[in-house]
Amino acid sequence: MSDEKTSGTVTADIGPEELDALRKQAAKSDEFRDLALRTRAEFENYQKRNQKEREQERKYWYAPLALDLVPVLDNLDRAMAAAKQAGETGPLVQGVAMVQSQFLEMLKRHGITRIEADGKAFDPNIHQAVMQQPSADVDAGTILQVLEQGFMNNDRVLRPAKVIVSSKPG
Image 1 (cartoon, rainbow, N blue to C red):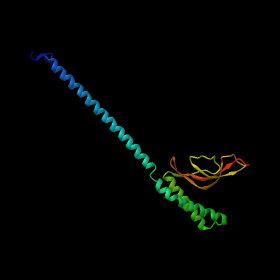
Image 2 (cartoon, rainbow, N blue to C red; image 1 turned 90 degrees about the vertical axis):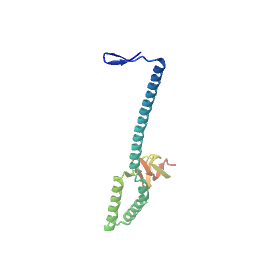
Image 3 (spheres, rainbow, N blue to C red; image 1 turned 30 degrees about the vertical axis):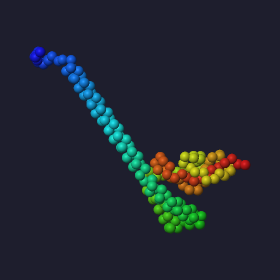
Image 4 (cartoon, rainbow, N blue to C red; image 1 turned 120 degrees about the horizontal axis):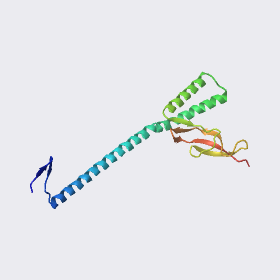
């Protein structure tokens, strides 16, 4: 009836109602522990997902700015082509070439690179075919000419290269 002491432990007579109440309390305790563990796991997953999203955002941070700057590069390309066609090699042409080179290097440091297309096989994921031209010299589906340079932002296409693609003659 009363508490007994045997070898340092206390034992008590517990009735069925008290035993039932203890079992319910233990079950509730287990339920709260499981809830705490699930909540902790969900929070850790949230933190990992948030970190990944921030890294992705940083990776493609410069895309909108680069899209605004790419037409300037197009104009530098046109200026260099016009100078080459006119046979000019003076200091002004050298200066334009240097600015163009610096521009490309700056973009490259931020993950923006040109799509190399001339002479490559046509890939609709990174090239935009503007027209086809029959050619006996190269295989069908080969890029004959780049009309407008394409650019990548790390592993994403920022702007596809506009190209002329070869087709089978006749």
